[in-house]
Image 1 (cartoon, rainbow, N blue to C red):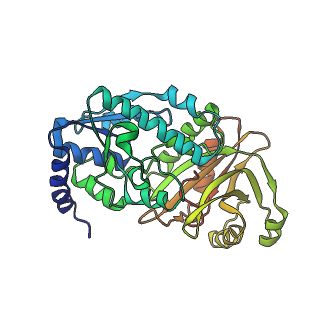
Image 2 (tube, rainbow, N blue to C red):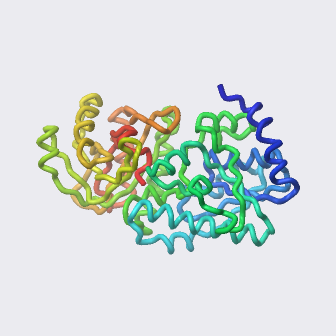
Image 3 (cartoon, rainbow, N blue to C red):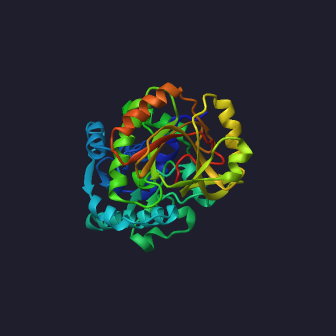
Length: 371
């Protein structure tokens, strides 16, 4: 069983031996992993640590302000606003891996500039075991996995990376966060990927889709926060789709396939497959049977339509899962009345939202995130 006190006793001398009296930069995304890593290092190194949060433009609604406020009595966090630079550079990109890699290059180039300006040679970040397992397995590139891929960070960006949580899984990181005295708003916070809403705007990135997704995600986190799910969020995709006669005949319900694709995992390798939708079915066990048949085809995510209308450009997906280690996960069986209430709120955000679906795919064959 994981023991936070023993963990700190083990890593503290290693960190002190490595860093000595040098300053060190900590990159905080607002999620539990990076924040816990930064606070751990601050407890060990004190004023040697420079904790910063880059506003990439892909953060949650009011994220930077909220995180700084939550940490005001724990960590002297500085906010660096680079939102326009990031959005401009990534606008128009559709491919999931291209997005992640472009984001990674921008993110670390920005950190490199900050490090050089402050005479810093070390960067601490919150990489955890699930990040590098998925990246090394070729499922998807986690932006913060560098050393494990053979990337020479000192040669490329001028700093050496320290990853004190690299052998821990999410439940262990949360336990460490509680032990370090982080507020519940951080220790129990929803997992949030480093690239943020960039990878929840599935397919081509546009500013309109990004701003709609930011508003929708705020509703989802508010509505589902007290239901005990491991992770929950929204995605936005273009609504163009067509009926697949072959799959429909196989499962005896109309199955539509979107033009947009999403990441999945099959046989421990990455699968970049189709997103499909099915009608609303008031029986989750029947839904599970249908989804199992659909995903035998080139489909990684299946959504059950909760609400729709005739016109609109975008489809909103709601994702909620239950998991222990984030390596496997099952979709949460949310009451349909609750989903319908949420969908009605979402439809009122923007007239271009054509439909709302609930993702009913487990991991595998889906990944938890879509990109």
